[in-house]
Image (cartoon, rainbow, N blue to C red; front, side):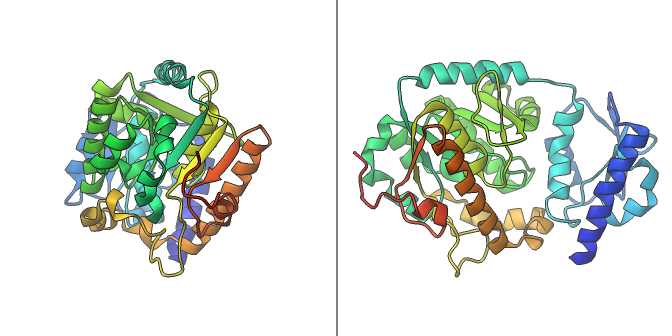
Length: 360
């Protein structure tokens, strides 16, 4: 792993220098392949490059390197290369694939996102409380908190799997952002997106995601154009608005999109299902089986091995806890109140546990 990490660092640095020296590609229409096609290459192309682009074997506007070891043979054209090898390092392969369409299709949906955010804010403006529902063990306690049904309900990720909860809550906002679990070609991700479409159709939920994923989603699902909201990057913590659709990017959906969205629309924000990682957990943390596609997890691991191989889960939790505390402090300084409906292995969450079963 250390060697791959060193190569990854070198690749990112040298590509940046090449971009400064040679510029970045524009009007990309032809994409070449360096390193050959794997067994799933056509599935990847069909998902990540649904139109606009032509895959060629000759001279191209942009190249995808499918074998990371070939980086050193293409040093002076790294400014127009993306390494899509899922055996390379960490998230490099999956993010490179998923960013291609948004970066080079030439489609800009920023005004659409602003319009949809304004419509969402107008629809929800009468409610001053919000609740964020996450996928930890305490998610099962949602029926103990019927008062949350009158709040703005913000859900995330594979919560869309649970039809019983969706009917109980009738959610308002769905947040997701992961290149492996949500914007990938793999079966887990495809199943998740089918449930997203179902949730939008039945409940009219608005969906919030990174702005560079909006074009790809609309290329496949144009029917969700009046519900999709792309969120850009901000240099520091920020609560989004129609005129300022950006947040501070973090590695966790709660700090990245859910809390900023809830804090933009409500003054009092409740949290359920943020249990964090126990010492016995083997990956990020234990997910509640009610809101996890457990039978498909191996599909994700097989499709994106470096994502899991190069992860330090304890370090991830510690960093997430620190960012959570910083975001809470930012919001509380601006008049927001945060209350957890469960205890947690995350200190930032457990400090705000109200210790009772109901908040009313």
